Image (cartoon, rainbow, N blue to C red; front, side):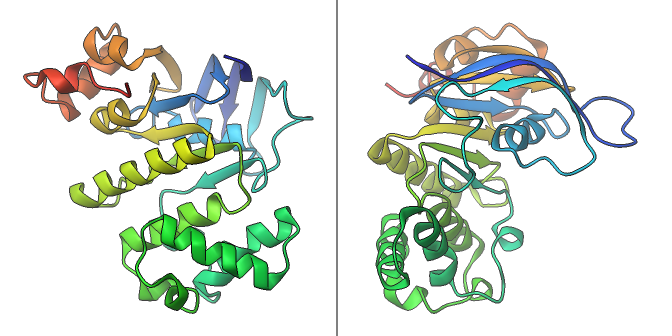
Length: 261
C-alpha cells in the first residue's frame, strides 16, 4: 500500500494541562485502509483525530510532524478530508436546513451550482438510508432523531467526495441497534467511494467489525498497533486487554477473530 500519512513523534499539549494529550505518537496511515483508533476517555484518540484533520484549537502546543506525501502540504478539510463529529447536534447548524448543510460542501468544492448541489444532497440522504430525502432537504436538525442527525452529518462529510473520512466517536451517543446501522452505513460508503477511514471509538467490538488495523491509545501514548486479528486475538498491551474485556465477549470466537475479510 501507498503511505498516505506519516506521523512522526507527534506530541500535543493543551494550555494549562498537566500532561500532554498526545505523547510522541508515531504511525503511518496507508491509502485505502481502515484504521480504528481506540481508547478510553482521555486516552488522546480524539485529539489525534483533530490533529490529523487540522482541527486543533488555537493555543495548543504541537511538536513532531504530520507528513502527507500525496497532499501539499495537507489535505483540505471538506474537500480532501471529511470529518464526522461525535455530537451531530453541535456540528449541524440549527438555523440552516438539512439540504443547505449537505449541499454546501458539494457546491464549494465540486463546482456545482445550488440546484445541482441539492440534487447531490438528496442522493446522499438516500444513500445514508434516510426516508423521504426530498422532504428532509427542507427540514431542520431539531426535527430529526439523534441517529438521523448523525446520518446527515455523514452525508455532509462525504458531499465533496473526500478521499479520507475521519469519524470521531460517531456511535457513542446512540443505542446499540442504531450503532450497528451506522457502522454498516460507514462500511458501505467507504467501500463504494474507495475512501481511507479513520474510525475513533472506545468500543473494541465495533472497531473489530469495521477496521483493517487497530491502534490502541492510553494516557496519550500509542500502546500497540496491528491488524485486527492480531490485536483482538493476541493483545499485547494492558490497555487493549482492558478494552477487550469491556466490549467483546471473549467466549464468542467470531468476535475474537473479528475484522473485515
